[in-house]
Length: 159
Image (cartoon, rainbow, N blue to C red; front, side, top):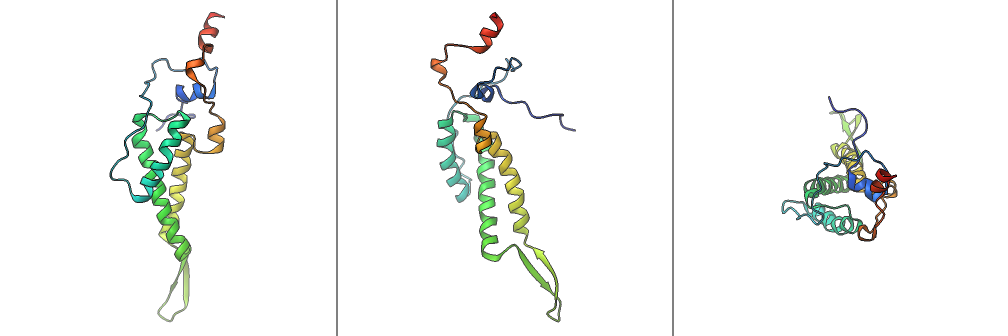
């Protein structure tokens, strides 16, 4: 059984949000900021998504070199959604099953509809993790850490 409650917010994200929370994990691992290498095995759509997202995430200050695997899953899921959506646009969401007399027995959904739906659910979770939705971005405040002479945690400990 999983842990109860929401997943803890990483310290870097709390800092980007300008959080005053004192209960951050002082031993939290700090991965190297930077651009992960794009995997060779990404599909065409996934590679295009990677090339679009990586510069944006890097500019937002939320990308680290260790994020490559999670980003690859996001991009592959995007590619899978695109392929399913193209099929749906071409063939529609449903097809009819007829009996030997030509009478319509039932209308069924193409499997690609379920694939697209599953992909959207997965993508929404990854979009939140990487700050790729307006609501996720609204919780992040990017600060210039070099000019941040006022350390809130130090101030709170002194006060």
